[in-house]
Image (cartoon, rainbow, N blue to C red; front, side, top):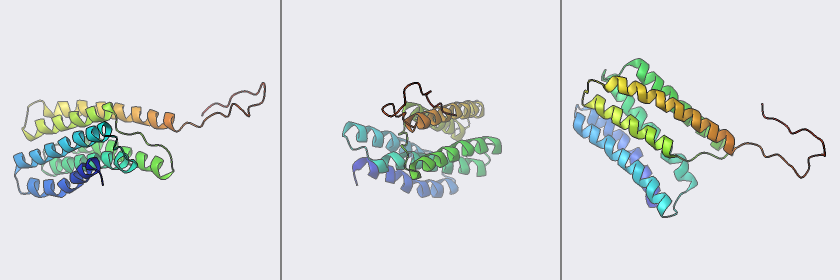
Length: 185
């Protein structure tokens, strides 16, 4: 296992640690665990790209670790009445849709889209929204809704990238003269 995949695995380990610390009422340490998970997210991708250690497993596990940590944090904030059911539902819908979509393409042998700058920006914005919620900032809930809206925009961009990456190629060598090109539905 290479270092980037080890860092990704560490994020999976941090999930139950976060749950235990948050449920014990230690908000600042829980927030710091979430930040540590965010830092490992940045580091694993950076190290993988810079050292040529990008793997198929890493491409699949990295966003899964991000989503599971974020879902855990969202659920903990919901159960502590720090965010609304509507906000949690919108975030769950988006993240579960992204996980299901990625799995759908992966298990059908299709190419998956690795995390890009829009996905990373969305994660950073979610982490900042959660920070504002943890510290009870007056604008936190409005900011969270703005980030939720932005996250759906990035989801639609990922869907377009998935489709473009897996678009069937036209066989121009075997196309008959004068035959119209097939159009995608």
